[in-house]
Amino acid sequence: MTDIATFGNNHSADGGKRAEYDALFAIEPDAMAHLHSRLAGIASEHGLVDIAYRTIDTPVGQLLLAATETGLVRVAFERENFEAVLESLADKISPRVLQAPRRLDAVAAEIDEYFTGKRRAFDVPLDYAMSSGFRQIVQRYLPHIGYGHTQSYKEVAELVGNPKAVRAVGTACATNPLPVVVPCHRVLRTDGSLGGYIGGLEAKTTLLTLEKAA
Image (cartoon, rainbow, N blue to C red):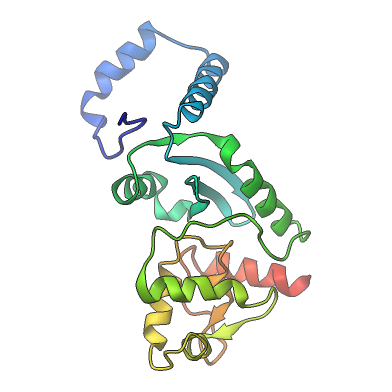
């Protein structure tokens, strides 16, 4: 198998040589983008891309989207460190990772519709490969919490059949690999306070405010 991209290498050590190389073989940004697009297309045609990714701008900041052939496998906030997220995907699923925006066009369009108030549920296929066990059970349940509604960690624990696992529900929400699309932001503490959120409390407030206003 051919590695499309390998993450985790430290390029800072040869920064001087890289700058010299870039100066000698300068390529216009548009030409580089065209070459990358051709590479992505050819790699996809030959089945060499296991994980495609892209970034989009949203009201909660830039998001990284990543998809396998099965479906959307990761949504990450910028505060999670996109490079670290890609490294994790490479380690856990496949090192054949490539920036290939077209595979994620439908996801990007649905997220844009969500943030403009035109969409209340997501239809794109999901890949839960980044979670397992009780966490995945909780994460698969979360889309059943209706748009604009919230439930407490305790209520979710009861509804997934393990009423004593309140803290584990919190962990499942905190480690949700598909935030926004899988709405862990709709889970609050029993007293109504926000609790934690992988994208930060400001992002959680923005999402809840958006849905409340609809």
